[in-house]
Image (cartoon, rainbow, N blue to C red):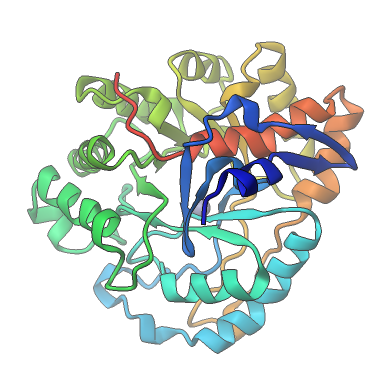
Length: 340
Ligand SMILES: [Zn+2]
């Protein structure tokens, strides 16, 4: 439930022990949608904006939720979520799309049991192989696809009364293919009806700017677009160009081996005064059905244990961390129509 009181109560963040207010930068009518219903966006708190709990790589043609068992996944994933909660994280954005293992009932159970707020999505995962697209994605128009996603926003996902908090799509990693163009166009139509932010698994700058151009042509502001896996683009000047148009630059593949790279990218963006446009996360987790005990599940704590201390050593102060991990997440996942 959203109330003025809970909103104000939530408007503080503790990163490394200091408390500072953030909510004054957000309207208190801005909301985000979790698997347990709407919350004030300012109540997202410390957030990981691109993670996964379960991913099934079997492919859309053999997709079957009976391939996993809730109790088994919970047994494996819950301790990682509890650990994350204990580190001060309040919200986890689950980026697993439909036909890749999105299971909203499972997410709701895990949210309730862990106390973490979890956000799920609507949309389809394209990309060069298109293995995770259902057959109808190839035959239906962009408007028909948008209609399916809008319906999840208005009626809930699979009769669960659980609603998506954003649109997740994926496109191919070079000049956009026809099917990738259709997905970003469908996402634009869906955004204009629902206000859901579009997070697109993209990678390099070439497809990112083609997506931004399509969005603008259809009347959607780049502020509604998250350039997912921007870290795969090695020309950092492209981040400046995207951010200056209003897009979110998401550096979301943090792991134990690339802390220094993330510090450098973030320091570069800070120097360019673009911190208000940046998101950071691990893209971790990944219980994989079909593998023994779900395979090698990766935890979500590198950001807290390694990145934050490294950023502090490199001149990032509390306000920067609060912006990066709380305020930007709340703004990026606020549900509102943003027109070009
Ligand atoms: Zn991912």
